[in-house]
Image (cartoon, rainbow, N blue to C red; front, side, top):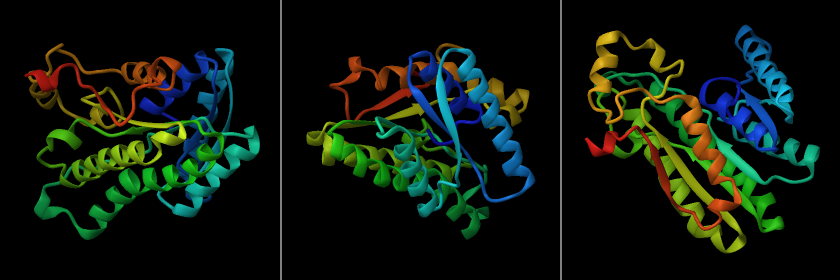
Length: 248
């Protein structure tokens, strides 16, 4: 699972460990630097918690926005466990900015991390899943990939692209035993939303039917279901986990 050292990714990793799955924890690693060291430490803490819950797994650092690193992550997983049953593409970044202020570098960085990385990992994973004629792919999109959002043109575009990627994989490989679905979180309590001020939070919650932000565990429960046998006939779908924003 990409991007699993904190936030939503961490919650999913812990839930899958509780479900009895072996989880490969991926963290962003861009060589020897302070950020990579901090990310690895966070990943190690996730693994320790997983083991305390009776689960098991390994840690692999990789910048999955690089195609070779994404391929290596998948290959190392198969080398370790002999197979790959599930791929959960959770790695992502955001940087709110008005359209006219988005630089080429800003645009490319968001697209590379939030869309291209998912494509690279899916392409690498499907090759292994085809051989087994079984696989479950869960791509993390966002509610703004469906609705759009002011100040998030690049992020919304990337997350909308994730939906197209998911639908197409579902059609292309459904007859090979591979299901592909997307999860579209609404406003979830993460590092990203922690930067919002109280006025922004109040405005957001006014459009959420259940009257609260979601938690990473809300997302983890949906992912747990989608990789379970109970979801064998679900493919090519986007599951909105948004507290009823779409109903407002």
